[in-house]
Length: 315
Image (cartoon, rainbow, N blue to C red; front, top):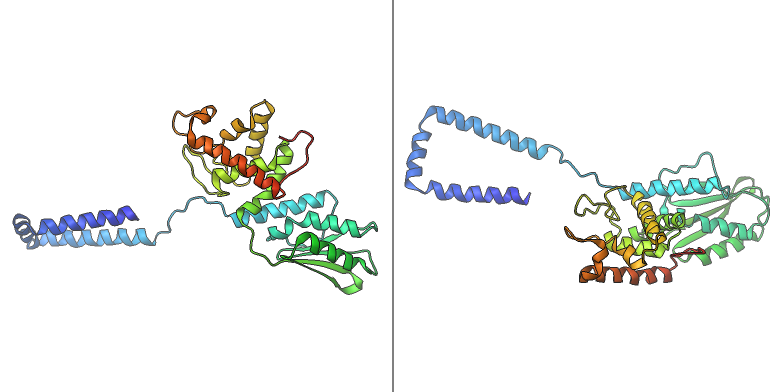
C-alpha cells in the first residue's frame, strides 16, 4: 500500500510539471481536439476505473496464519481425551469438547488428583462439561457428607483465587463439582507450558531449557517469519504450530545425548545467523554469545516458577 501511494504521488508530480511546459501544452491541445483521441481517452479511463474497482473490492489474499485460539482449543480437547484413555476420569457421552477452556483443561489433572485424595471409595469421576465451566459429577454416592467441604477447601488452596469452586447437589443426590476461571486470559507463554512439558517428558530434557529457547527465538509467536524459509515458534523449516515444540525437543535431546554442551546446543537455535555463519562459532559473535547467556538466565527463571519435571538423568 505504501508503494502504491508513493508511485501515485510521483506520477501526479510529474504530470503537474509536464503540463506546465509550453510544448506539452500545445501537444495536448492538438490531441484534445482530435475525436479519435477523445474516444481512446474515455475508453482508457473506463478500463483503468474498472481495474481499480476490481482490485479494491477483490478480497485480499491472506497469508496462511495460524489461529492460536483454535490451535489451543484442539490441543486442550486432545489433552482431555488423553486423560480419558488413562482411566483417571470418564467422559460423559454428551460432553461437548468443541471449545474447551485451556485455563480449565490444564488444571484438570490437579483436580483429579485432589478428588482422589479426598474420595477413598472406589468410584470414577465423570466429566460432564468442559468449556467456560469445568463440571465433574461424582456419581456413586447417596451422601457426599463432609467430603464436599474438604474437596472445596483443598481445591481453593491449590488453584488460588482466580478459580471459583462450587459443589452442587442435583437430582438423585448426585454431587457436581463446578470450577470457573475468573482471571485474565492466559497468554501464549502460559498456554505453551503444558505442550513444552509434554514434549520434554518424551525426550527426557529440561522443560525450562526448551521454554527459555522458545522465548528468545520467537517470544511464543506461532506466525513469526525468519530468513531462509524459517518460520513458526522455533523458526524451523518444518512443522506447523505445536509440532515445532516436539521437533525442537527431539532435536535438543539428540544434541545433548551425543555429548554436545548445553551452551552449544542452545546456540544451534540462534535465529539471527547471517549467510556463511556457522552455529559452532557462536562464541565469536557478541550478539550470539549474549543471546545464549540470556537463554541460560531464563532457564533458572522458569525452574524457579515451577516449570520442571523429575528425571533420573535430566539434562
